[in-house]
Length: 110
Image 1 (cartoon, rainbow, N blue to C red):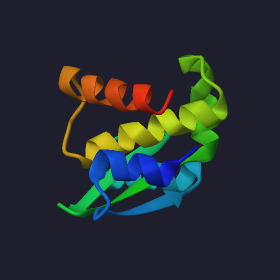
Image 2: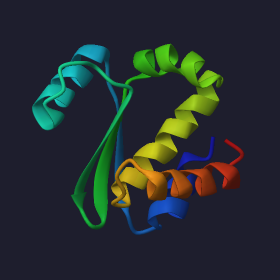
Image 3: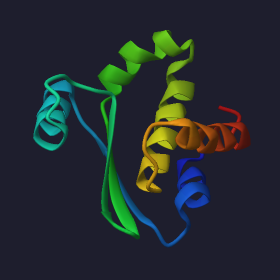
């Protein structure tokens, strides 16, 4: 998947993105610390500034969730990556965010 191209398309070429792969226990700690949610998750996005941010992805959680979405691992990973990028763009869950995600998923055939 062209992850750099996705990042540049959603956030621009000057945006600095850190992509971190982590395990379920670390993802649980992050989710408790920053969202006060006591369960693990597949992806978390953290804006640092208007021009930088971090995305944490848990591959083991991604593998668990892909079946619920009827997607292959690679496709679901890209789906999540776009979801994280749109969060970094400043959108929260809802119709506007979904519309943005659909636009980018179509662009990258996801």
